[in-house]
Image 1 (cartoon, helix red, strand yellow):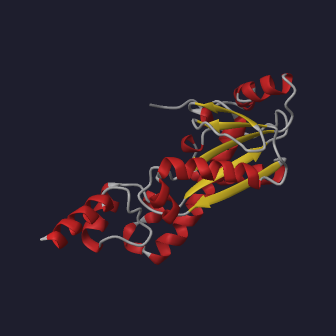
Image 2 (tube, rainbow, N blue to C red):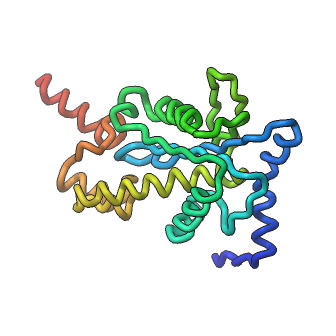
Image 3 (cartoon, rainbow, N blue to C red):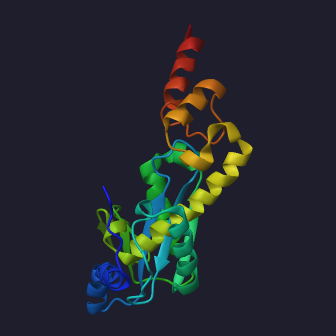
Length: 225
């Protein structure tokens, strides 16, 4: 299927629609609205990375969208523009150890709250991608399903999280080149699973995720016998 390339006016109109929730909140009296999103939640390895971003009102960023819909080149360009133009930006990485200790949902939830709290400029409202966040300092928040495709702030946060984590996977691929992390980003692709079959697991692999989880269970059964 061919995706129609929008001209500049069409893209500006599209991006303007992404500020619908932010503008509604500003009409209610909120001024500093943060978006928060994650990257790597479903991967088999490594940290999950959380991005948090406060954008100026109705800032036009060409091609701004859910990071998963963008090419690496456009993501990098937007990342630099977000860093240069945002009111405030933060990112945090939640470690494999914390993911395995808590579970991926709780680790992501904690990471989102931490990312918002790490923003140098404190928001008075937070829009989160599909997660209900509760803050001790009584910052108001709202969860938006598919928020990275609906909200400019969440889309920007998704780009910050994705680019940051992709850079981490580049580093990991240099340490473990046989797993192709620079291509699969740690997700369970056919090639990644074949590499696990051939070379085993790395310290980066999440022990509470398959196939590591089953391998641990099998090892326990072997020890029992």
